[in-house]
Length: 159
Image (cartoon, rainbow, N blue to C red; front, side, top):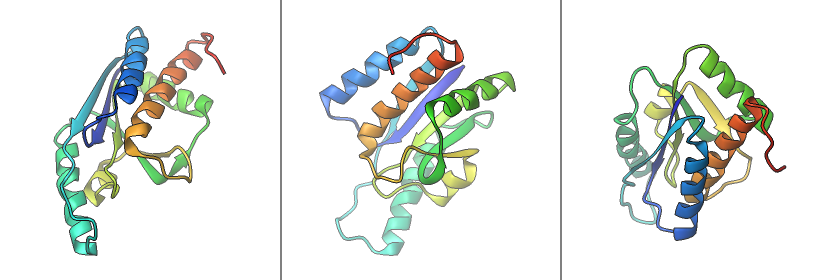
């Protein structure tokens, strides 16, 4: 399986980079994982509704340019479906079983995802009703993907 984690913005925090690198390394035996950063759109603090839409559209174009036609897209969104780790593992196992060997997880910028990205999405996933920094979501996501493979393979992993 080839997994892409596409996210808006540059990761600056060293501790998050190290954590993500560790889980990407651990995922090596299970899948090829690419972490792809697309630039966030610079915007003033107080945006109008139209400006917010424009920022999301520009970021969305950058995201969509990284996704091929044959990729199954899972967007991380507040309104997405909340799954247990076991159900995420089952979902990923089903994708592999039914020939979806390319999967992209998409993490939007601080304003969220454009309508175009949401329309391209095959599945909306939510980690919680709470809001998390999108930089931290990368680490949480890659850990859950690793956990999913451990569950699928029935291998031990700390709980």
